[in-house]
Image 1 (cartoon, rainbow, N blue to C red):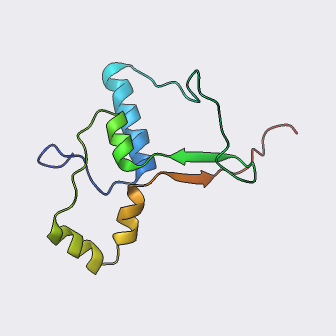
Image 2: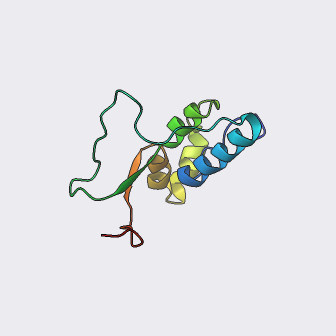
Image 3: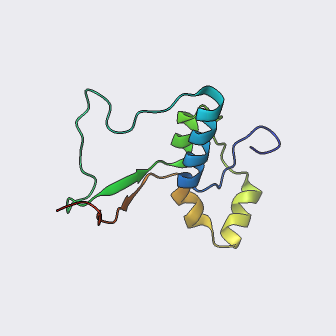
Length: 109
């Protein structure tokens, strides 16, 4: 959290999700059930049928954990981000990412 009780805007989503989940379990004892909720059909995110992991967008992650919404950066901050060449990185934080998982080498085939 920043000094005005605002969540950090440029955190990497995957480690942030892990950290917030660990804090939630320590504070409330509440764990989230993994997988597809009842009533929803599981779908493949990969066209070739491989194993994937979906990483939530940072705003969606904060909403799920009950944190305040991320506010749009101020114009001066946007100029600074563009000047150092991080505009693409910052925009990617606001989008859901699907990454391929390595095949399970320890499973019997």
